[in-house]
Image 1 (cartoon, rainbow, N blue to C red):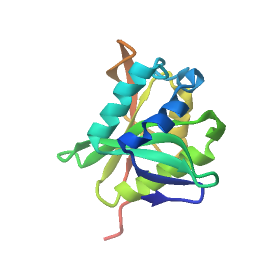
Image 2 (cartoon, one colour):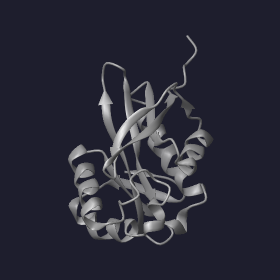
Image 3 (tube, one colour):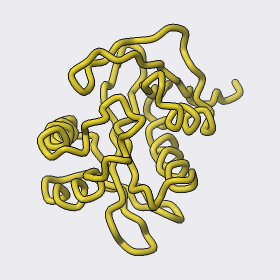
Amino acid sequence: MLEGALVRLRPSTRADWGALFTVAADPLLWAVHPAHDRWQEPVFRAYFEAGIASGGALTIIDRAGDTVIGSSRFDNWNADADEIEIGWTYLARSHWGGAYNREVKRLMLDHILQYVGTVVFTVGVNNIRSRRAVEKIGGRVRPGTVDRLMAGELKPHVIYEIQRPRTPA
């Protein structure tokens, strides 16, 4: 479990389905996201199942009310590149505004950068809210774009990276 002042993150389980879907069922959460249809139950179910199968899905709990407010994930470990991806993050709109997302990402980064050299974030080109959030935590965009299949279409994404701080020799 990862714990900060605002949130606790713990591995997601199938028992989290109802609470996570309750948060995700808000269409406005996904309005600027490339997977704009993720609020629909069958689409979210596929997303949820992929998270569980990845072994890296985390349920985000607001410490103040001990309530589920969203999810994030570690995935796509690439041993040759010494990197892993953080993403698939969503938060209840009541927790938008930066402090919660920053803490979630900081907890995840502090944990995983003990084990890998680079963390990447794959973000839809037009998902300005998420792009600004990654930039605020120090993400640097890699040149070019990659296409990802979302909502039945190939959508362009940019990749941000954050590298483990180098220690003096």
